[in-house]
Length: 281
Image 1: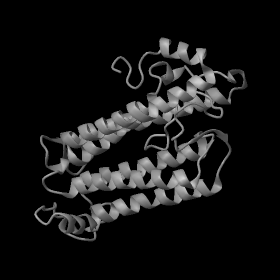
Image 2 (image 1 turned 90 degrees about the vertical axis):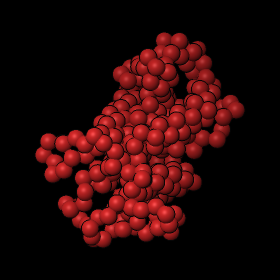
Image 3 (image 1 turned 180 degrees about the vertical axis):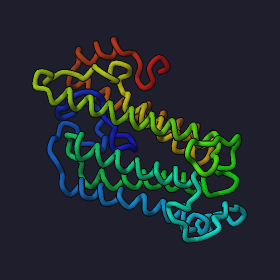
Image 4 (image 1 turned 135 degrees about the vertical axis):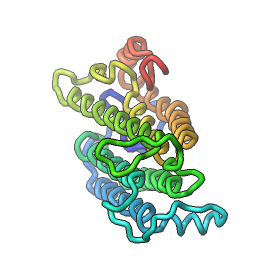
């Protein structure tokens, strides 16, 4: 499994075999895990509140002051900002943090079939909270904030202009999280149909790339970082997830799928040559 809790391909499951066993998801082990689910929902639900403290109540400035005394943060004018008075770039980032929680909880509760224990819920939650917190700190720090990168663009109905990276990052975030979610919904509907038992889902977005949900995750994660810290932060985030998918998650799934579907998986790989992004890779 990748750092995302939604790292699974468009296929069915059985007890995995082969050399790749270090996946956080218990592939082929079906059924709910109340402790794992409760742990994940509880930990992930705390994240928006933490990001709100960093973005609106001065936690970010205090942390930056401790970690790097030479860095300055963008002043808020008040340590007790509300959602309505918070600057638009910070509202956008807070919305992204909240959206990531909603998406991941929805995946676990309504889309996932595999057992998801607390031993997986804890590291996945910690990773996502750390990355979201890093993005929040990038936004509030003067030298790294995407809010300081021009040119500025007025959004219809908004009270202030925002920088181009924030606009582009927001679009990437929306497209990415929709791609990941829609692909997983399509896969679940396919697998829930009795006539598709034992078949690989190759329809919908899965006909574009074999790990299209990974592509969606990479896109919205990069968009999140773009809206927080600009182009360099986005590039580093995209490179990091592309690296982990290429060297870890995709090999794990490829071994898993070969052990289960063999010729069917080989045909799917031949018919859909792209692993992440259609017509790119």
